[in-house]
Image 1 (cartoon, helix red, strand yellow):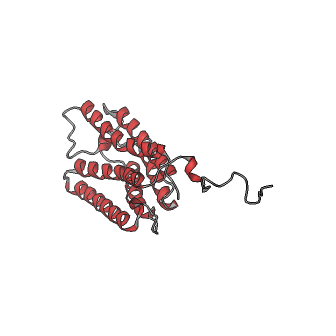
Image 2 (tube, helix red, strand yellow):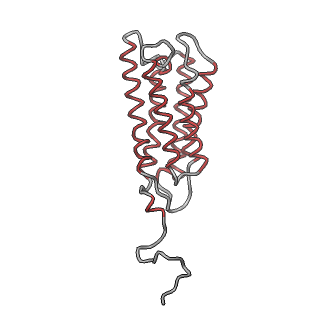
Image 3 (tube, helix red, strand yellow):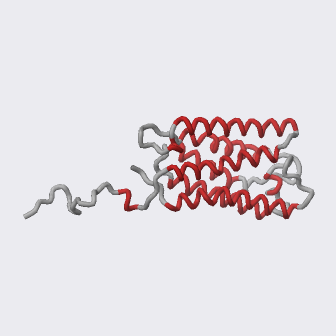
Length: 213
């Protein structure tokens, strides 16, 4: 049985807290001119925005958390771990192509789309089969979660086109994508390096070829 190290629980638990705290602080610095219902988080991370450094630091922390969680989530399928790690890289990449103060940015939008797609697909890509698979990595829950995240991404796009509650849609989607790794880690058995060995308590330390006498 593959165990998840304790630090993966820390990284997956810190990510959603850091994200919410980051945008709250950045919103406070932005002041009443910012509308969290209709404006995106990217506005808070735009160059020149009062909360630029807060949101930039938050995105870096979020990306590092996803990378650590992907590394420690050993029971997950490799494709899912790679997609989760890719989502972490996309979060960090957003700090290199921030949104402009006004108007749009094709490069920024492309990174956002890639990040959303990877974080929406990683649950189903990480799924496993068999009686010993943790609940958070079973086919039905992972397929359902990925479908809901894709629906959330569609809602976000519709709000952009219709000038609707874009900020609400983005926050619901990003927080859901940030919470799911924690749910998966909690559902997995956790332990240290000592659990990785298959030696039973009564088995001698020597190899199978050792004999008494």
